Image 1 (cartoon, one colour):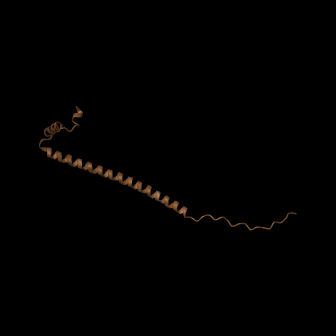
Image 2 (cartoon, rainbow, N blue to C red; image 1 turned 90 degrees about the vertical axis):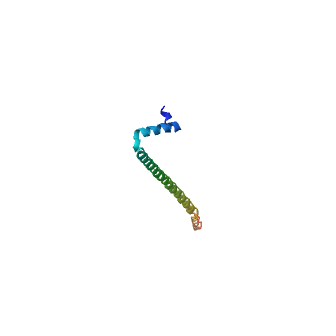
Image 3 (cartoon, rainbow, N blue to C red; image 1 turned 180 degrees about the vertical axis):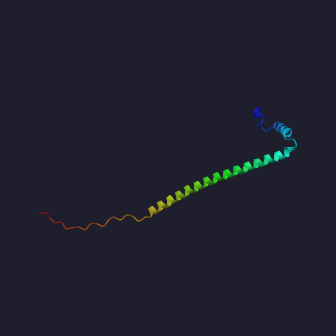
Length: 99
């Protein structure tokens, strides 16, 4: 029976409308207006939260991408560094026969 009210069939909407008229009477337009305003505020709040989450994800993605680009730049710098040159050969001393 409870799930019947969750189904937005025309009969259910008619019953809910009749209950609203019985409960609120002449104040029904005022109540409906305040419910509508509350619903709109709820939607604005959800959009704000959604935007905060998206901006956080975007900034995290940007920082990871920036770090990746920095790592790539560091690798390129290492690749362009001067090559190692071997030390000059030691001067040869004449072979002196032992005593």
